[in-house]
Length: 544
Image 1 (cartoon, rainbow, N blue to C red):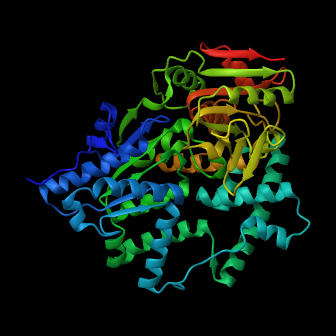
Image 2 (cartoon, one colour; image 1 turned 45 degrees about the vertical axis):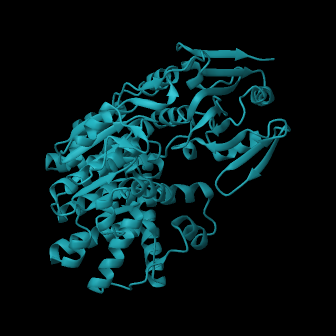
Image 3 (cartoon, one colour; image 1 turned 60 degrees about the vertical axis):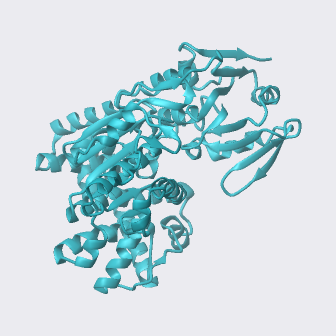
């Protein structure tokens, strides 16, 4: 009798019923919707152990598994944790060799491998790949020295969004004409069309510059990889087909996937119809500004076909009161997938606190006394909406600072045992601390929520993607006033005001294992804080 891997027991913990049910499912497409702190990674590791168990038991061909994580750091960590679990089994240890049956990649590292392999086997371009020295924004500053920072930012975002969303400029022009068909919208339509024309010219010059230098940017990895996989299918490139055909594809943090990354996985599936297992949390979709598209998880079935959906709702990170309050808060956006997150038991009645002072200085001074009261060796996060919220913290005389490339480490002379760090809300995702202090909870343009409006063309770019996908489904192009009125209704009702900011605030709140504290100023409170004051278990303290 061969010893099997215990997939119900991962990293010293027994998986709960919902985790086990999702793992034992063998559907062609599986979406696991898991809340913050519910054990998404352990579920993925359990799934891999379950897959390998079938091989140990049946001795059929060893399954080829591709696991995709979003960052280099998380990829390394995930691979390390997977190997620690599966290589404890003698049967797996005998056959294990890096990359043979298990590949753990980011989208970019996977794309790079496909591009390199294709260039070598098909002699299509230079084998050595040189990463672009200039991004599109840097290129604009060099070639158009008089261009403003605001214009540069808009062009740069539009350039990368059109490529991430896999949108041709022709599509963008077409949808702009549909969006603004009427005479009184003529000015807006012409302004957008002019911007698209200039952007198309500039992007072509940028691509020519890269090509002349023999360079390629990160987005081009993905584009070339997509084209190469299609080429491999059409030319029956056996070497490429053998290397990048998988039986299972597992995607972590699926809510962050972009349309271009989605296209790459779709092309891989044309090589072999693998089983797809995706784990994500739509409540934590906070990177739409960088190209992720929430519709890919909200309407998973539309993109992948018949799907079995599971929910993992028991968090092992934060207490019950915070679980309920944060869940109710994020679900004010009715387009989110419904989950009933259950927290852990906690006897402390003050799990969610607001410290409300009369001035910008008062709330920061309150930190001193709060820190003195904390248990020894407590881990503390100070979380701001933006990176530049660090500047407020730097004004605290009783704190000492050490700035590294990735984070701000903070020490306190009277409490050197405390582990204190600053993060922006975006950078805090995936991390956790005992106590979380959310600063910058102000009603301001650069407060939390941020009230910076998206530029019209940036919104249109995202809508163009959804329009194209809808047309694919209908099999025809839709245009005209009646369709546009229905479309505007669909778009405006799928997300509430500050929808992504609401998700970002949820992410910040749910980093806390024990307690979350909001620092606010009287008469300048964030609308999110005013909303939370109406909830049970939210304690507000006024200080002089």
